[in-house]
Amino acid sequence: MKRTLIAFGLLAVVVVQAAERWVPDYLRKISVTIRAEAGFSKSEGSGTLFVRDVKDGNKTTQRVFVWTAGHVLSDLRREESTLVSGKPAKKVVFDNPKILRELRNKDGRRTGEVVVDTKVLRYSPANKHDLALLMVMSEDFEAEKSVEFIPEGAALTRIGERLWHCGSMLGSGRNGEGSGHNSITDGVMSAHGRLLFKQPFCQTTANAMPGSSGGIIADEKGRYVAMLVRGAGETFNLGVPVARMHQWAKSNGIAWAMDPSKPVSLKEIEKLPIEGSGEGAGNDNGESKAYPFMIRKFGQGGK
Image (cartoon, rainbow, N blue to C red; front, top):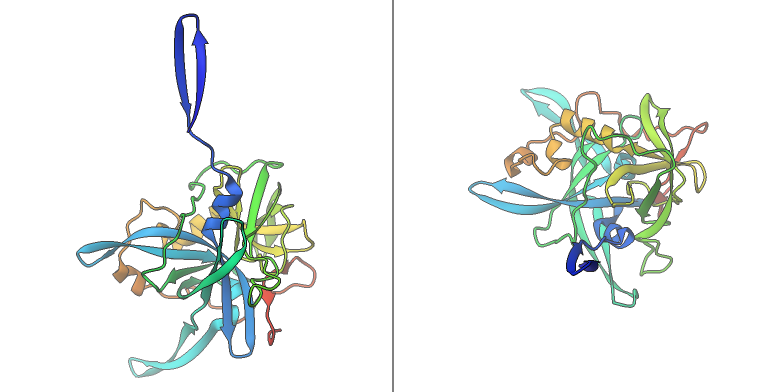
């Protein structure tokens, strides 16, 4: 806390001001690398952690969840044949993506990493909303911080306002070599309403690189403004606006993932379909040569 002493004649007034958090440090604590490995295909992106109280029977526990971009996980998706009421049907399943959090000492030197499995709860492909919600499977995994989303219905971030991005640029690397995990860049809000696949995106000059996909774009208070998903150069990047994330979450039965005041139970989570109505688009990444490209990173053996 910072104390300011203001004197008015014989009267001394002490004003206590809350210390402002340093946004880059905060963003690094809520950001993780996403690893999607399936067979010979390997890719990495970024994700943002948040914590929710989850009712499990008669008790309530805290669970950790992750927002990321749908296209980061697309190679993990497959369809299995099954029978429903004696009729053949297709069931969408995902291999488990992993999240990676680096460990560093006080000097910032890398000392190791924590890797845990997650479960895909909801998914939308790149040519739809390009969003995915994950749940950390380990109940022992703790998030240092939980992200704060700009509330639904809030005014748009002003054009020209400074923004921060935290992402796993160029991926995490292997054995710590060339690791871009939790890299910080900044820029401004360039535009709202850029349309792609009939969906609105916001544009920012905050630098991004392969591996940034799914990473947070935050305002100067550290609040979640958008998810970075595409780029056409280091400083021409597109994000899924937080307003669209709110809408998608509500329409897919996961409003609690954006609003901590909304209750949720483990039973409800277990019943969630991975893909909602109209979201099943196979493994189509929605790549377009005439428009900004996706910025996930492929590892060795990938595409």
